Amino acid sequence: MDGSGQRTRVVVVARPTTGRPLAATLSAAGYEVYRTPTVADMSDLLNRVQPHAAVVALDAGWHDVAEIASHFGRGSRPVPVLLVGDPGRYPTVANLPRVPSEVGAEALCEAVCRLVGAR
Figure 1: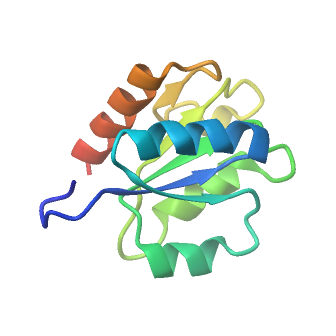
Figure 2: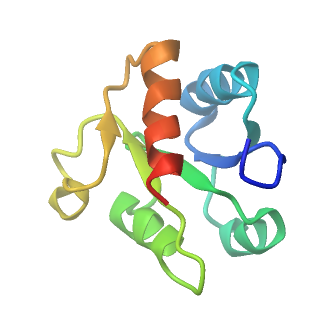
Figure 3: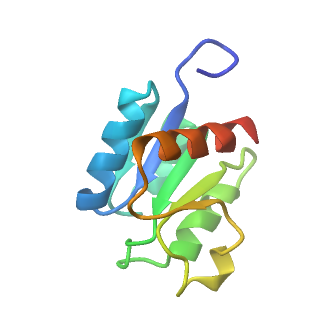
């Protein structure tokens, strides 16, 4: 929950096979989760949802992950990003918080909690 008593909103950007389990884990932990497998509607989603955090899977090979991550940092209300996977081929995002692809539920929730607390 955020300071107003509302559930913390998290956007998950990932292919369906990765995004579904991430979203299910975060939903079960009490987060309000929005998923998008593509970036086509991301600006609209960000404006509509105003998320507290974003979880971006590095398996999103259909788009430049560095561009996706930077998209969340733009605007008047930057959104912190947690990467899922190995940033090997994306050195420009290597400084962002990251969890491995096979992250457990507890570790994922702890990472998102730290991320939201850092905003």
